[in-house]
Length: 316
Length: 104
Image 1 (tube, rainbow over the protein chains, first blue to last red):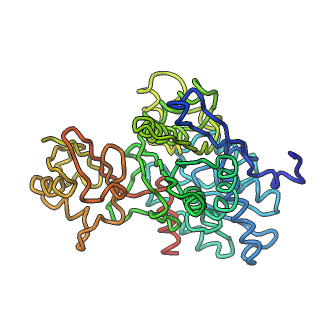
Image 2 (cartoon, helix red, strand yellow):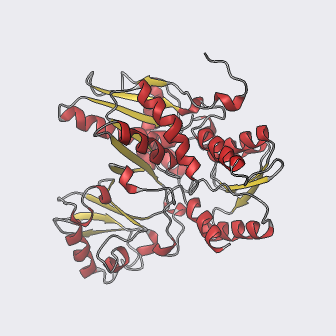
Image 3 (cartoon, rainbow over the protein chains, first blue to last red):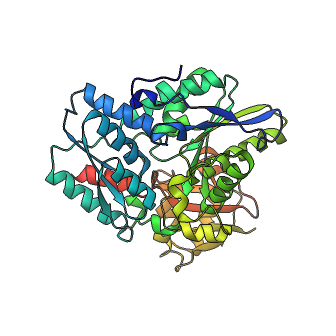
């Protein structure tokens, strides 16, 4: 049955597709969970819906309220759609170095946007977010980095879908941002599948993005629990771009660059298994499609050009 | 034995501005001690007084996070590449939001 009462009900139940050409051997298989098939085109629809529902249920959010969320894109787009359908106003604070499509999409869904300067790094963004929350104490910040409903969305939906469709799963690979995806799916699979490996791929950005003054300004999301993970890879821009292009060229899946980083890690563990003569079913998460990143120009030209084009951008 | 170590912007005051330096050691701990001999004070920015890795420091050997490969006892071999990065999970924006909340 693929009929739903509303767009919100059509969230999740995304396809899991095999990648016969990228898989190292018939015994070591790669599977892609296509989260770009969600209503606004990314995995963040699941978290946005769960966070809004949780806030409604515990009385924090009342009809007509204003939501404010700092987001580099996909969560804002997902929240904007959910806010529209559930009757809330949304204000997004985002760094100005995100792609123009993301901004256009947010505006189209009706979100109001406040930019924090890219060059000012974190300090100006901090000042801006702080100022806004002081000026508007009645606004609600769902705060995806510390909201348990973000991880619970994946514990209750994404994880069970994956296990149902791939009972033989040996490895799960996903991107590490708010960490909600990996914490939720990882906890679920660890409870159900003995020995399953939970692998994180985090984007390694250009230096501009790491605009800290000292180490003590660093940040680890409250949702993060390292004990859920088995391994964690840092993937540079060049490898992410290379794999993103390979995915569409070889398997016809047009994904965003964070998926390239995830595929890079998935291929590493798949080839390790093949070399060791072990059978493996490696599932990785396609967090979003590539449409929002076309303006970067990084899908064409040389890898060096693409790397330069993405320097200083939040591509995941 | 030479191991290339990439240094983040905020720690380059210890390396005379160098983006990448070379060190030696058969474990990560040995490497960091070796580097500290060349760049005094660097190790102290990465390791806490209790001897563990600083909460906001991530170190990768050949792109893999050492917290999952034996931490400071992670084995190193000639030609390995070590990358030191500050923790800014979720893009630079996560901690900005966090700091705003903490001080609001």
